[in-house]
Length: 517
Ligand code: FAD
Image 1 (cartoon, rainbow, N blue to C red):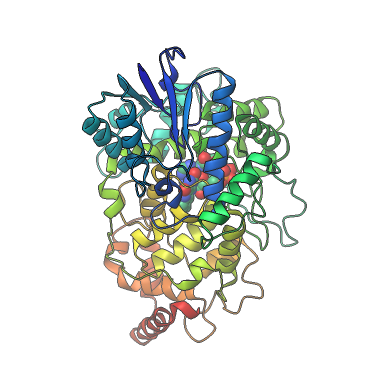
Image 2 (cartoon, rainbow, N blue to C red; image 1 turned 30 degrees about the horizontal axis):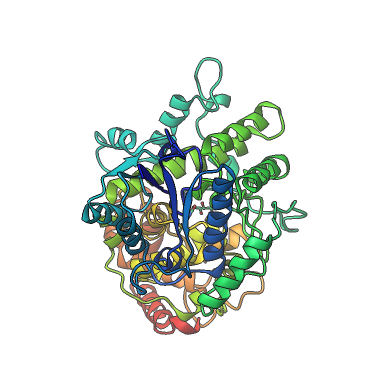
């Protein structure tokens, strides 16, 4: 055999660089289902495991349909020694059976897996030929070149502008930003009207076919105690379905995506969001086609500029930036703990059984669907993790486990950097801090909640509000020195010594009964 082309579970694009020059007469494709992958760091939502395995098996069918030779190792299929379940060990066993002249793989998205594949290939004496990941619009080398001269922390906004110019996205005839501004974020932060979100056209959903149902059986059999449910599973698992999901989003939901991006409402898990992250992260969709479709909708007058710009910024800006940040700051990012937070996760993070209406709604929908939108992840669970001083590694492991779109390169910087500020601000200018008042402004969760968002102390005080003030109190000097948080500290300093002592006592009470909140 000349080349063995390893297709990883989150690299399901058949036009990737690994297939360049593929010759079915001499080369072979290898796909490996491995427990270590599906289990994540600790364990994983059943829907996440099912999504990965179903999308892999559908991709395998597409490979066979092309007539390409494929070795596909199923999760329950033994290779080599029986206990060799992680991907690297299974790969080593395959290479030992029949060593190819070269092992081709698109550069893996995960730092540890990349190292592990290198070691396995070296140990087997098989030359490893990594190919660039062309899925992304900014290569790792280009990001490193952009970031190199930057003093202080990296700023997404400057990166994003450069990406817009370089890829000629949303520019006018003079090469200036369409509409005269790079960023229309101020128009994109509304809450739903008091009467509620109204009728939102549902996102595309796909009934599980026979192959996916077979995967469900496997998941229930092999991972019975894992979190989450499969009965709502409707994720795209093929490229055709991913394209249909994109079309449906552009036609029915993009026009309202912008204003309600940051809005939350009880029992409204998807809002106007795209639900395209799984298809993008599995590489069933190319970000270029998503960006082009959104821009075309704007040019055709089918969606307003502010919302389209906001949507494109998430993909051309945030997604590419986050990937660059991951590779720049790994492996330190995985260990970062700026505030030395060590509290374990409260039990209700795995069940949603809490009296805080916002956290209950977000965690329950997470267990139902493996999905929560950005503001729910950042400003409900993430914010709680920061304010309560939860251990960043435990929080990151939770996010990696419970979201269907979770892959480490995008999950870790969002959790450790954005939500928890555990990296001390390498690419964010301040911690994302807020009290219960923010959640009240952006949602209807506080109506009917047992806790009151405006109260700092007392039995009805909202734990977010209590912990917010205590956080300011604890980090007063550092937050006062940051122009973007100085105003928060000024408000704290209006309180007298007795009020501040009350605050501290109130926070201690909340932290002492985290499991019962
Ligand atoms: P939309 O709101 O419709 O946005 C469109 C697309 O933009 C998304 O599909 C996604 O590809 C991209 N995007 C938006 N925000 C970000 C961001 N901050 N970073 C990178 N890409 C972004 N995203 C993941 O794909 N996997 C994760 O594991 C993940 N973990 C997160 C953890 C935390 C604590 C936070 C705050 C955010 C996380 N995100 C993650 C980013 C974002 O929340 C999800 O991409 C988004 O909610 C997915 O839903 P959607 O496809 O409906 O997104």
